[in-house]
Image (tube, rainbow, N blue to C red; front, side, top):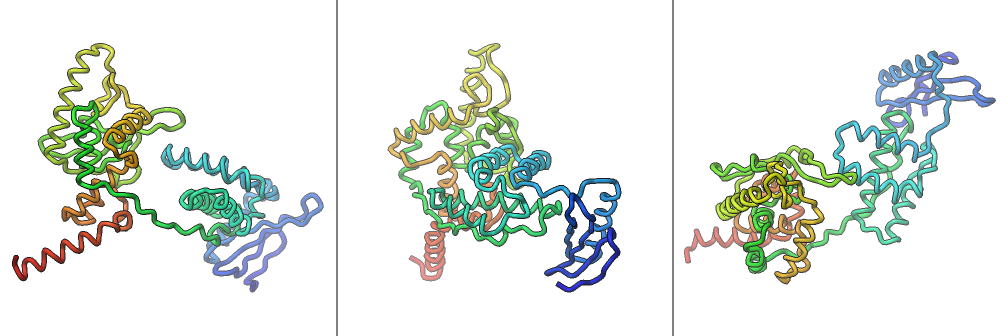
Length: 379
């Protein structure tokens, strides 16, 4: 480390540090110990500004010599910051589970300046050895990395040690894909069921569970043959709540096949009859797929209904979310471009679509090659 410029005591010093600059403000003797405060930045000018701000805070009497926070205390502050920066309630709920189940027990009492790559690496290894999936371990690592990234921006640590740690590799698990024959068998079981239109929407339009339960009649345009995803229904913190779609691309307008539109019209007619029977007991939320009295449907109740139907179709392995994957697979095999599938599903990036459905690409390539040869050489 090469010193760039010195300043008198109480003024601070700036010097070259790694790939940027650093500054130290001498706070003098605090409780019998010489105390200094560090700041960091990419440029000398940036660090000078931070140093001036630090000096003003010191002159106002702020206790800059306070000991470093424990990581658990910073996580509590960090969660408060995330609650106010627009982070989705479901994401916050997931963060809390990761913190309380995995991070706090192991690292909560460690001071921020004492966190090391070794401690984080050991935590991830312990979780892997305990049987936590690679995906879950990566989520643990991601939360620690993000929390320390914000701590670095707040000047609570001089570097994000989690960046040095490599999370476990992801091994793509190829799930069994629903075949056309199995889909037809499922459709036969669904026929006449109260929620037939919901499951068919999942299969033919690729909506997520929360998007289906948040869908309103105002979002369905029968004339244009489209529906628009504008909100989702999720259970967070013990309450059912409507929220905006997760990403900008998740808010989307998609074409609806004619058979699905017919089912939706039939479903609307049945719902109007049920509303008339319920009378004043009906609570109108304009939902396409509400509970029996018009209120938002409990997602767990939908899952229980699905478990019974898939068992009746002999498809015990089939998750409700797999209908969304089946929709994408059928679209790709039918000749739809990956970018079209990306838009229908509301994926944020084309790479996500390509990676998720790589297993059907060979079939698409074979069909394309055979079609091209057919045009060249005929039957």
